[in-house]
Structures are given as structure tokens and as C-alpha cells.
Image (tube, rainbow, N blue to C red; front, side, top):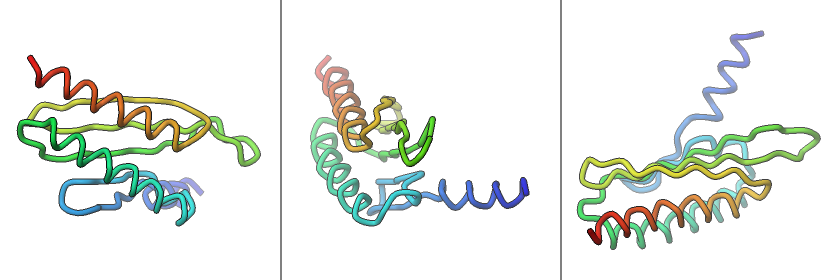
Length: 118
């Protein structure tokens, strides 16, 4: 039984690569229509983040569902951007996956902008 759970977990956490430097992890558990919206949001923010980076290398967005009860879960979003070998991270938990995604991406964008203005 534990082996089956591990295989399912590995499938869910298998990364989706968008282009060469965008990676989505944990999004195989959400519907295809939601993934399309996620890709558009992440792509839009990635363009904005790249404009503020010195040497943009990659962005990884990870989704983790927590406290899932009867189709009602909280979504934990982790965003990691590598700019000039320096990692920038943000983490947000919200019931609405899109709100959490937007907040986490906005937070990491603000951190990068603030850091690179110095």
C-alpha cells in the first residue's frame, strides 16, 4: 500500500516544464482548465519578473494541497526564482488556488524589484 501511495505522490509531483526555465510542480492533481489559467498567470508574471532581473535563470512554482476535506482544501504555493545565482522565495496559503498563486508571484516579484534597485 505504501508503495502505491509513493507512486501516486511521484506522479502528482512530477514537474511540468513550460519553455526552458519555467517549472510547475504538483499541478497534475488539478483540472486541465485550471492548469491553462495557471500557465497564463505564471507566464505573465515571468515576463514581468524577467524585466526586473539582472540574469534570470529559472522559476519554479510548487502546489501542495493541505487540509483536504470533502473537495475543500487549502492550497500552499511556493515560488522560487533564481536570478544571477541568487534564490528568491515566497510562500502563500489560501483556499483559492489562483489567489494564492497571484499573491506568491506578486510577493517574489516585489522582492526581486526591491533587491535589484539597491
